[in-house]
Length: 377
Image 1 (cartoon, rainbow, N blue to C red):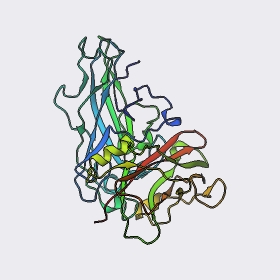
Image 2 (image 1 turned 90 degrees about the horizontal axis):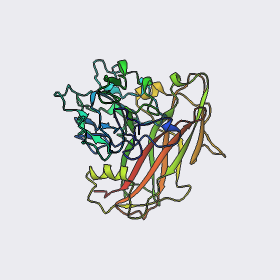
Image 3 (image 1 turned 120 degrees about the vertical axis):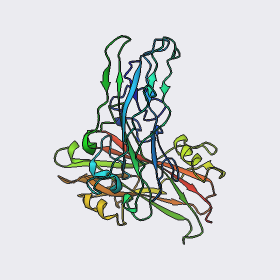
Image 4 (image 1 turned 135 degrees about the horizontal axis):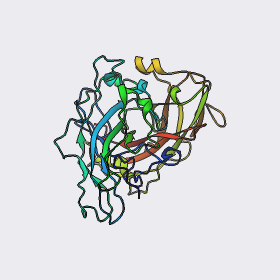
C-alpha cells in the first residue's frame, strides 16, 4: 500500500487513501468521519442550536509490518451545504445562507483551531508503532466557530437536511529521513469548485439524514413522505448543455440488521431506544420527481428550470429519471416520494440512496436517507 499521509476516509471500510475515480463506482457521500454534536443527531441539525462540526483524520501505513512515517494534520476546513447529490465536486452557491459570506456578510465557515504542538500527529515515526499495518486515527477534532443554523439554511420551512464538505491539509515524508512535503491543498475563499472528492483523499463529504415520521395525523390508507434535495452539475465542471440521471436505490436490509451509517445516526438521537428493525418497500412505492414545494428565497435564486424532467418511460416521476440541463443551467430541486404502508410499526427503518449519475463523466453523486417510524406523541 502506498502511503499518502493524513486523509479523511469516505467510508471507513474500503477507502485506503488510494482514491482514483472513486465516484464512478462507489458511494462516497456517507463519510462517518464527519459528524455534528450539540444538535438533533450526528447528521441532522436544528435551527438555533450551536452545532459543532467534528472531523476524524487518518494516517495511512507504508505497509504491513513496516516502519511508519511521521505525518501531521495542518488544517481542516468545513462547509455546510444545501442537501444535494452533485457528484464529487461542489459549488460556493450551495453553501447554506448562514455560513455563506456572499449571503451573510461576515459569515465564517469553521476550521481547525491551532492545535498544541504534536497533538495531531497521525504517526509518531516509531519503528514498531504500527506493525499491523492498521490505520492510525486522530480523535475527532472539533472545528470552530460553531454553526448556528437558521431557517434559511433549509430548502423549505420544515426540513433540516444539509450536507457537509470537509478539506484537510497535512505534512508527510514519503520515507524515513526524506524531506517533508505538503499533502492536500487549502480551499481559497470558499471556492468549493476546487473540491475533487473523487480523487483527493484529503477531502470527504457526508450527505446522510434521519427522517422521523408518524402515523395518525395524516389522512389516507398510509403516509406519503416527501424529501427535497438539489441535483445538478456546476457550470465550472462542464461546457454547454448537460444532463444527468437520478435513481432511487433501496439499501438492502435484513429484518434484524440496519444499515450501519443510518444506525449510527439513530444511536445519537432520541430514537435509539425504539425497537429498531430494517424493512423494504415494493417497487413503485418510491419515486423521484421535481419538487413541487417552494424553496427558500436564496435557493430559488440558484435553481433553474430543467429543459425537461421525465421518467425513462412516461409520466414525470419514477425510480429512474433523466434530467437535461440547458446551457448555463446548474441546479434543480428534486424530491424523493415514498408511500409507506399503514401497518408500519414504530421502530421500522427504511433506507435509500438517491443516486445521481452525470451522463458525460459517469461520475456519481448521492444522498442517503433513513426513514424511521416514531410515536406520534
